[in-house]
Image (cartoon, rainbow, N blue to C red; front, side):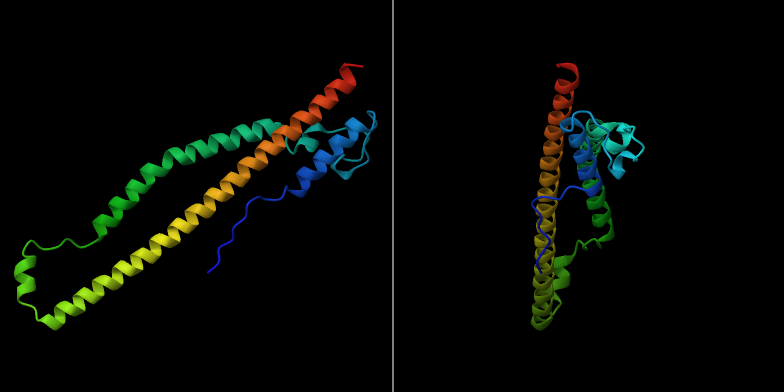
Length: 168
């Protein structure tokens, strides 16, 4: 089975429209922008342009904090899950050697084959988990690149805005 591997997510349409409207405002000489993202009223609603009232930088900080929290919780959650799985598995009896000596060779071969099949199943499950982990890491990397691109684009737009209006 082929997993969905994406190296980069496309920008959301609302964000592209907001950035385009803001860029048109800066390059357009301060004229009001007639885009629907600006409300069409002639006045610019900065919260609409930035996607929210807290802006891209605050969203970036929020996403970073969420990622750090998830990373901090990952190891304890994995340990808890491992403890739960260990408690579910049946405990082996201390008299294993005695039990095995009373079993026929054919039954031992069946047990061996069953154990080999279980090991094979666990290996396949492990490979699936590793592929999923790699896919999630690639998606995280693409999100980080996108955040970095948006931050650079955000800084460029506001630098141009500042230069145009305050450094005439």
